[in-house]
Length: 341
Ligand code: ASP
Image 1 (cartoon, rainbow, N blue to C red):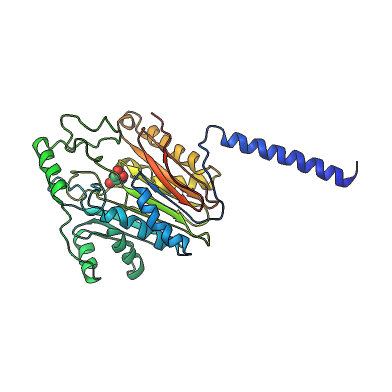
Image 2: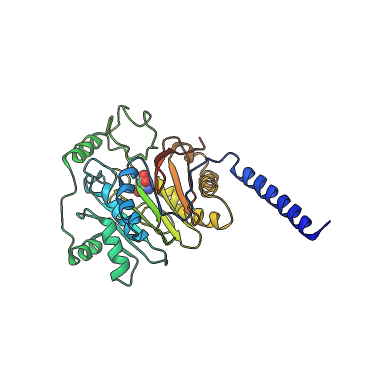
């Protein structure tokens, strides 16, 4: 057999193996429309759609992923109707709106604020912490002092709607994290927000710009009616958000305590490093939560969302009800996320 023929045969066999390998890998996985090497932004929940639109303005004009994620998550932060992020967020059990946020760029630079009051855009304060201080995290009064010194305006973030929900909650004062399942949370007797939003939903956003650089942002008002001073996963680098520019980026939403326990977003990125697709990595992280707290995890919601360096993305959740939004050059879509229970 000629060398050329042998080469052709072996490369054909090689591609067949590759193809079946791919098919095997894809088996059981959600098929997403991946536009390789294009800018892309993905973010948690349905409200991620509007946030993505703002991020896309930056990405589509050749801007940096870091600017895109900051601009993107500022949309729900400023949205008075969104009671789980920023302005209008549900308060802690003392009636105070305390916000958590973090941001991370392609060079492991990161910044975070925890338990920040009176500032509408904690994500921008987190970015300033990253860029203007030698530190990564500022908390509480120190974070507020830093924000004011950097020109941020002190505002009342407690809206009449959120105050009303809090006063209603005060009647029973039952602190209980509830999973995000429509119709199971709502319209129950002790639901402080009947027909209203969920009691927790963070915006986590990760993006890749036209030059292939990754960044992420995560911002939340945390669990509604939480204990004063409680901080969840969202502003903790590695838990609520992680970016490794060689591999990919991940973010989390849901009951933060469970995400912190497994350093969830870092775990997802590491699982992608080991060769898992974004969806497989998110699924394995969810399974890790189950293996750590098998009984508890049946009653809680946690979801992960991930993007790899090839522009492939995926998500997985404990429970039904998690969604995410995608925007790239070819699609603007909302996806329901696969779940274990
Ligand atoms: N992860 C957030 C927290 O625990 C809440 C959420 O995403 O639902 O504060």
